[in-house]
Image 1 (spheres, rainbow, N blue to C red):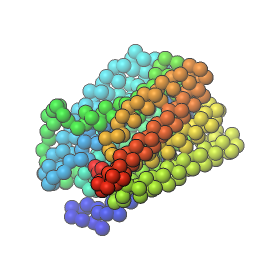
Image 2: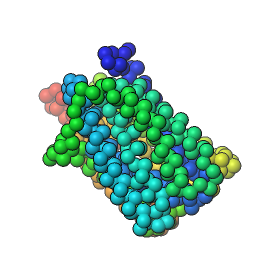
Image 3: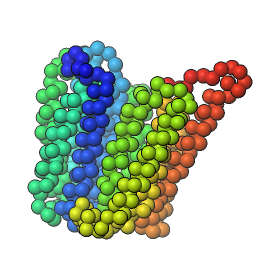
Length: 419
């Protein structure tokens, strides 16, 4: 049902949000797939390193700006002011960061030109992503879907028109400029709802800004492993980065499922009691694990020709990683469901698990690479996923025991922790 001001409510909003997340995830997957098909193995390795720099930069920006933004509550003027401030801060900081990246490109061969290209297009892609968070807090996921759908079509079209053997710098430029139609649509759609607000950049420099906590969580979570992979390229072999990123592209659809579970699971699970939450997430974890194993098995059984059609010259290196990557994503399904359980039952329990076992994953990744190259690094990531899943489920058991203890002594069980 549509509410006032074009806002969507209830199941319709949830469905549209899932579709939008799918469009954004599919864009990221197809960028890597198309770049791999157009590039040589070494060219895709360079592109992957620069795209990984973008992924980390995007994660930091959206942790500091976007995750705090979606928690804003208040009237139309309050929300509009928050959105205007977020977009202004993102644009200003992206220009500064882009300048640093462009300058760094002059002294970081061999991917220097591609890094300079990333610096040039960074404000466009970051602003387009920031607009998605504005649409979320405004209750307009259909507008986000429109902008992200336009970006998906534009990105695929522009990259498909690039010649075989295109340089990493050309591919980065084409990918970045392909976000312009989506950004233009977002600007037009945001113009009216943001007209009642003002711009306040000082809120992002204040002590205690929530984004600071979210940045730390990202840095010790996904960011640490991504930076470790990037370090492999800078200090070891760029081809290893290409292989690992090619494998992540193959398993990209599962990342969309993981993101949907994290984004839409808590509101649904909060309606259940403690035991029901655990039962539901155990079923979810089992389903995600089976999906990961089945997806990896399909790619393992397909003839090599199919893989080459998808990833081009990068396929042989990716095929060598398939057993490890399949194990990693199977275990990630169990870990995602465990962390989701903790977020509902006892939200404060998730950060220690993320910190300790994300750092362990980095250590295992590095040790695996030293021992067995890219294949060893992939098995290191799988080992880190196994350890995190096990630790998270142990935490779930301990939380449930603490909750059940008052019942055993006749005091009555407390309600599960809520956000």
